[in-house]
Image (cartoon, rainbow, N blue to C red; front, side):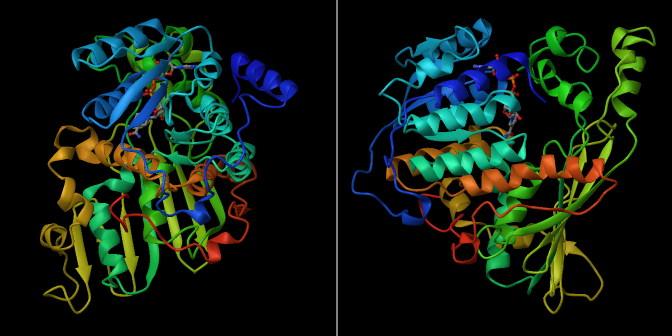
Length: 459
Ligand SMILES: NC(=O)c1ccc[n+]([C@@H]2O[C@H](COP(=O)([O-])OP(=O)(O)OC[C@H]3O[C@@H](n4cnc5c(N)ncnc54)[C@H](O)[C@@H]3O)[C@@H](O)[C@H]2O)c1
């Protein structure tokens, strides 16, 4: 999917050879990560995209004394004024605002008072903005999914390898308390040898609006120019694309469980999509059969199922289910030769540990016993953060990585590989569910890269 303004930006960037000044070798590549002597006591952040998600990151940043917000950028004046109001309420210095057009972020990136940039814009802007941020020598903190196309995944990797500037995909679900306890248990061998993981994004988004409580009529029926917040851009992806459009909330935790890019990797996948009914039905039910959008042909199947084969022999199943009436679930399941945990029902069974064979037991006692040290240490600070505290942890990891001047715990290779599942699933579905190879974005480094996520005080 490509918008005219993004196309124009990419065309100009190609003509000038670079979207922003190129500063080689400013930071060490991930392989050389270690606490650098020039650790920072304060971090200066810029924000590109201060809509619903961007403002939630701004709020987290405002809770911290070691963060200064020096600049913000958004094409929507309302988003800028709401962000400025938050910053003023917190008694902080007003940031410089960049608002003039889709490429205003390039001007912002020329500033030398930013150590990192949080990017929370529509998906199609993520990679151009992260590439420009890395070229400007700043840490890029990129919302999910990081990329829309395979080429974009390679653009992220190639830019990191050329510039040495880090890019972290801000996948907050990696920090969910239960999936981190499960990670702890997997690392301690309680599940035996891992064989299988199940996950997904199963979230009824038909009434898409995410409007911070502001009253808005027409969610799910109106989209594009007449929509509000995510409906302005996200629904169009469901018109144009048939694949798993949002794989990383599920895949992030699973990738850590299975050491993807760090001893293991995705080899190939196959995807299948059901017919597309949910969005059309929603428009007809809420806008009437004569609403102009009742004529829209939505390409996205209601439920998309993707299966991934991993190099170490595990299988992953990912669900994408955003246009059906259903309660929210990320549908996690972690399974090994000794047993399994399932998110829905929060139940566990471990052979030789669970009291009765063939019977589930509640996960709560395991959660307590294997609670991840990061959660034990920071649970109170996470109390005010969104999505049950995980938003605190993900921004913290980005900020602490900048402060320590080290590679982030979720790096550019993760951003590239996890996000690539979207275009690859589109390819597979378009070819009748044919298996498609997942590129090795690490170019072989996965064999020796050690796991780092959740393993030290920075991460
Ligand atoms: N990790 C999570 O839990 C989570 C939750 C919600 C959204 N997200 C992700 O965050 C991103 C933003 O989502 P959102 O809900 O905030 O959407 P949104 O529509 O509310 O905000 C996007 C903002 O980007 C601005 N924008 C668009 N083009 C721009 C440009 N060229 N330059 C500067 N600003 C521009 C828009 O004006 C808008 O304010 C998406 O990638 C979404 O998938 C992640």
